[in-house]
Amino acid sequence: MTWFNKQSRLVQILLLLIPVVNWITEIVVRWTTFLKKPGLIRLIVCIIVTVGGGFIFGWLDLIWILLFKHFFLQ
Image 1 (cartoon, rainbow, N blue to C red):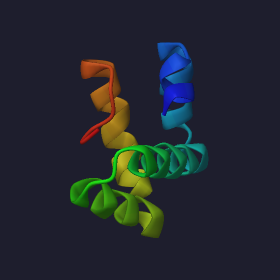
Image 2: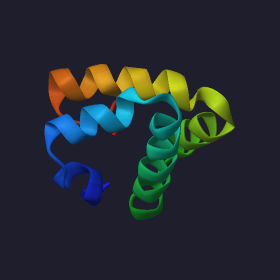
Image 3: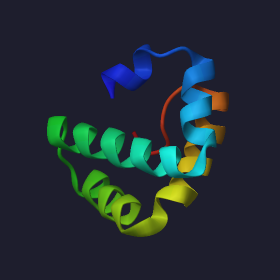
């Protein structure tokens, strides 16, 4: 998560715009955040992202980062 936040806004948007890279980025960022700050909602989101909802959360996070500069439910 800290690596992702250190990137420029353009790099963050590009990582979330490309479909397969989007899913991998979601998995890595969500699970590292969960390992640092465990919680039930974070665990549920991590499982959804890993099973296949990463594309949906990725597009949602892309919009969320454009508006609020952080991940949705983070």
